[in-house]
Length: 99
Image 1 (cartoon, rainbow, N blue to C red):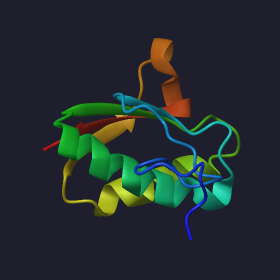
Image 2 (cartoon, rainbow, N blue to C red):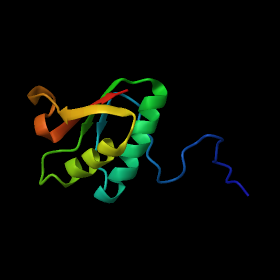
Image 3 (cartoon, one colour):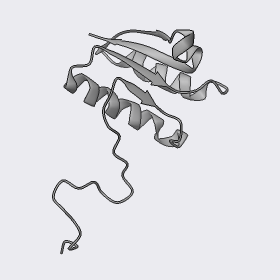
Image 4 (cartoon, helix red, strand yellow):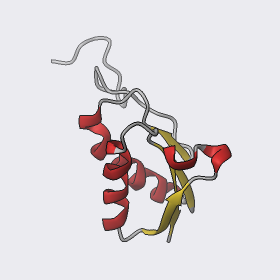
């Protein structure tokens, strides 16, 4: 039985909806969720027709950067990726070119 407050298409409890843009900022997400978030973001960005993206993973010790880049390296929709320019995060963000 559905709760009276449930609306069709409403997000599930505990699910965060992020407006789709050409920038994904991973700050604030638990590291265990990063891989799934990046894969879903790539799906949505490709479906929306984006050709270039920026994924902000932070500088830290590089764990999230490695996770992001491992996913990008295996995704056939990704033509290239590199560090963002300094004014857009430098090595704390990755610029992605999609096919």
